[in-house]
Amino acid sequence: MQEYPTTQPLTDRAPLAEQPGVYSESALWYGRRVFVKTLVADDPDSLARFQHEGRVAASLRHPLVASLLALTPTQLIFEFIEGGTLRERLECGPLGEAEATEVAAGVLNAVEYLHSAGVTHHDLKPENVMLLGGQPGWQSVRVIDFGMSHSRSLPLDIHSGTRMGTPHFMAPEQFLGVRGDPRSDLYSVGVLLFDCLAGHPPYEDALGWLAGIRERREALPGLEPLHPLIRSALSRDRSERPLSAARMAADLRAARRALGLPDLPLPRADNLDASA
Image 1 (tube, one colour):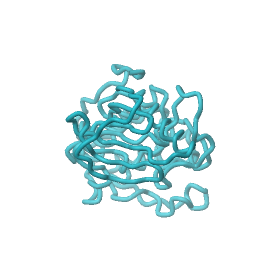
Image 2 (cartoon, one colour; image 1 turned 180 degrees about the vertical axis):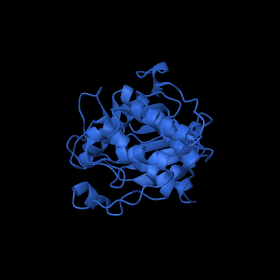
Image 3 (spheres, one colour; image 1 turned 90 degrees about the vertical axis):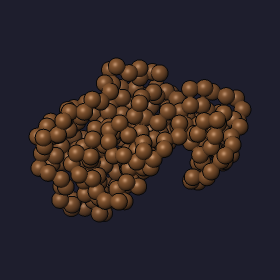
Image 4 (cartoon, one colour; image 1 turned 180 degrees about the horizontal axis):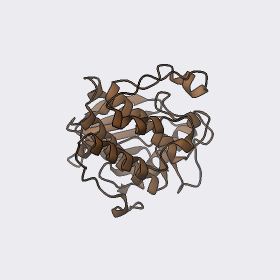
């Protein structure tokens, strides 16, 4: 990852999205296709949020996490991931158990690494999981977007006390303003797995569930060996969720074996440099 003091030249630019204060596009950067976020707002809060995402992304290096290649005061330049989001794939219909558990295993592998690096993502959802080549397999997974993340290595959490997140995928404690608890990400992975299998999240009234005034959940999707894992991950009580991403990944492997599915040759978090 390289840091530059001035704006980097871009060519062959194509707009992708615009969020409050940030413009996203694909472009060529020194001949390489990249994904670029550009800060277009000039207020201090927008700048702080943008710099926060850059600092977190710059601290990470994992094959299933989108790589930040360069940053400037107003640009974040990421590798370009050819394919689409998991959400775009799910719009074509839910996944079967083999594909859904492969994608979840890839996301969990990335999450285990993030947690070992002291980072809680806080916005895991199909829109923030890219699939390289559009294929729903563990090797295709690329986790993106660290705008809402919490990092223990940063001296200030700019989102402290806020209810930031996506209601259908955020954990109940996150809705109450709790930040930096890795178990919040495990809840989100449970919702993501549910969504992969069912084609929709578990709670129709997500805000009612988060506020504690609605309890009705859709029936657990997929075959029975997956149900204990999903049920545990979706628990309102954090203490009833898996203890860690590694534990949840082990439970997912056990469920896959019960379904007659093979183990996956995922990267080991302890073989990767969390400080890279």
